[in-house]
Picture 1 (tube, rainbow, N blue to C red):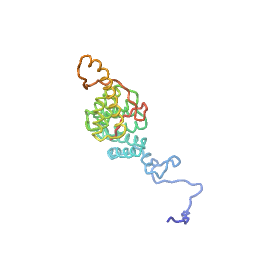
Picture 2: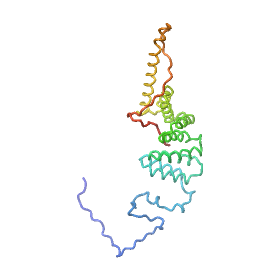
Picture 3: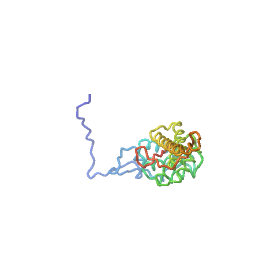
Length: 266
């Protein structure tokens, strides 16, 4: 049961008038209390003069983890800041820097900043275009390019991602999506099946798979209907046959024209 007593705080000794503030910390650490909450654990880190920091003493990998923690709670601006610091303090062209660039791109994309995202992914690929983080960079680059209206580059990037990491389900899904956009539904269907078998089983994947399957079935029925008169005329038995899928546009699961392209962070 909560207490109903009114607690009285200490009156303290008071301050002189006029009050002149004092601080034992150096001026670098001072913050404007009207702009930020001085009780915030992150305020100090935001206002420290980084010129006075020994780069060798900074754990860049820990900064990446901080950025991922921010991203997990959808604080993407703070995530971008953390990944930027990780890039600044990591050894140049190191795996940690590459990972930070990839995740910085993801955070930018979540903010709708696709130009910045593309730049981050390209920088990660410049560092290492076939390493541990290359597949994620490629498939996320495909996503960002698509969002900016590029209709040709994304498929090439998605193809490259699948080559780099055949176990990455988002890469298979993106490849399937872009193939379906070109009307290549038979190959797209195989990609969606692979993505599902690798664990990507959300509604968007199944929705895109069902649409590609529907287009294939519709084309097959149409092809068989056109072939019937010719088959009867030549007295040949009707048989199932492979039909080249035509070019069809696929809408998103909710009926909109926005693509359901998948993105992946590290």
